[in-house]
Length: 127
Length: 107
Image (cartoon, rainbow over all chains, first blue to last red; front, top):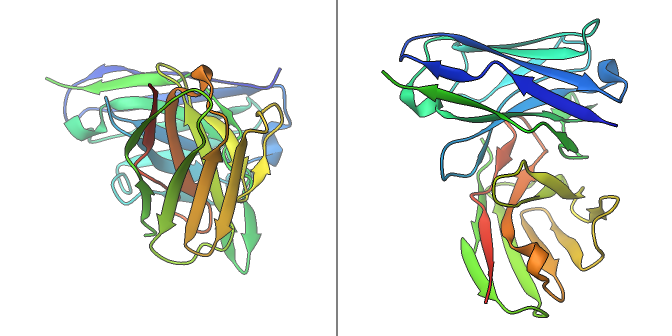
């Protein structure tokens, strides 16, 4: 069964750090990009970051660039999201999603959507 | 960044009705448009990719169309299990962006 499983969420104070993990199974992990998408309480979906299949290319939303770092370990079939300088507005459910990306005219594009999602892990930033 | 605008933000319809959700991009995205369904308390589920490609297992009452900057998701013969929020997402360029969502309620 194709599956993604997030972990690492929790309660953290403003300015603190947290590392999320996304463990994959059931597919050839090192052939696919992976994204993190978050959803604040009662709000819509917000794409946060993505990493290419090899880990060579990383992408970030402006709201997290410089504070969050995405990485992957293909030997462990796992993607990580290191979050630093956390703010109240980072409070959300964080999902990882398999996000096939292809390079077209030098730009990475996501034609096939995010076709596998984890169940999410909750991050709460509060004092 | 490409802004995705969905309308309406919510709608209420009866079982058997046909409903249409519109998604507009702030610049052309060719056909790099994906649709998701999120039922309460669950993770999003990919319904349609590449504007009109129905994902395996998704009922044929769901369909997508459009190109450039304007896209639609149509649900023909609405069912009770279609109660959910629906999101569009552009995959044309990073940062990837989602529409604000449309909440579908059953009358």
